[in-house]
Amino acid sequence: MISYKQSIKILKKSKIFIKNEIVKTNNCLNRIAANTINSNANNPSGDNAAFDGFVINSSETSNLSKKNNRLFKILGTIAAGDKPKNIKINKFQTFEIMTGGLIPKGFDTIIPIEQIVFYPNKKNPKYILVNKKINKYQHVRFKGSDYKKNDLLIKEGTILQPNHVLALKTLGIKKIKVKKIPNILFFSSGNEITDQEKIPDWKVRNSNSYYIKSIDKNFFFNFFYGGILKDKDERIFEKKIKKILNSKIDIIVTSGAVSAGKFDYIPHIIKKFKLSNYFKGVAIRPGKPILFAKIRGKQKAIFGLPGNPISSAACFRFFVFPYLENLLGLKKEKPIKAILKNDFTKKANFTRFIKSNFYTTKNGKIEVKILKGQESFRIKSFAKSNIWALFPSGKSKFKRGEIIDCFFPNHPNKILF
Image 1 (cartoon, rainbow, N blue to C red):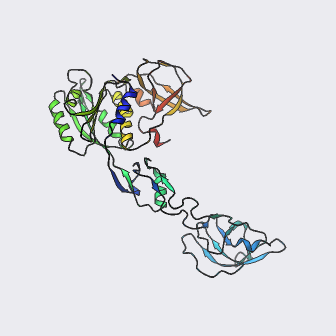
Image 2: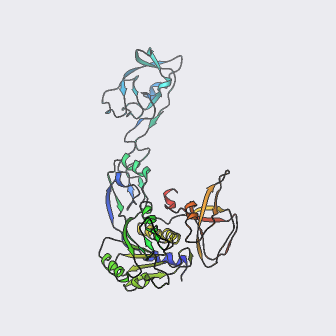
Image 3: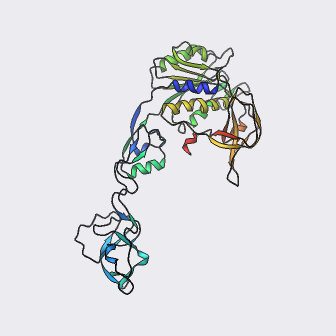
């Protein structure tokens, strides 16, 4: 049995290759940028108005005052989206301009509409009256002040969110290169597992496959269901693996049949194949019997998760997702730091994944509370939880007030942080 840290090192060395593909920017949500994306245009594309008002040449106001005012002739109106005016401009002329309208050549500042005095009157405006010096570049948005052409827009390995889609569409980027979504084929195992709704006492509803499927969009994979492997389906499973080796499936994930019981045949079958990396049994709870293997000479990997629902959920979160993270070029997920609310004791050489609740106090502190019912068969505490608290090996006792690493159960921390 190896430590959790050792298992993660093996996963990092066992990377399989995931190809890239080109997608339209309006279909890139929750995809991962395969390369760095730079702006292909200036934003704003030209100097424009940040305020409704009248655009003038500020130098023409340098000597103006209440005693020495000046009338500026109104030439027309410029709205956002209007084609730039290409006319000769004389001194002491102005355009009414709407927010977003392009500033014509010869003008450099805007007087807000609230400060305008019309002449001869507001109902029949032919001029505006200016009776003070107006500063240059007032209420002007400059060309490229947000993004200049070739500025960094999105870094490689970024999880693309709606704010990125907004930036891409604003800058006119139609298509981008992203990592392909890995394909995971999932098998449940055991004679006791059933997809039936009404069951006798000796049967167990197949919840693990539905849980994994429900988080596929959050954890960046396509879910395919391989069905339920019965206790005597060793040969069937072996044949399925052989077939999968020449398919589009990237990762096989099984649930159950990885411990040391009479019908726990998953490790035995997997060892029949040529493997480049392998481990079976990690000093963790829940999920100690977990298995991992990479097929030698093939871009395929296998995870054998324990059958207990909470063990399966924890192992997917802390083994399969870190593996996917590495394949897709994501930076290592950062934990949420929280203050432990209650004391906790465990075996020093084990890493524990603990069902917990985290919350923010009135004074802004983030605290995490360990829930009762940590056994791997207990669903109630998992349903009540909103975070996994991770207690690393090397230490037995954790006291209230210590800082603990926490991870969201149903989506990566990096989605929100």
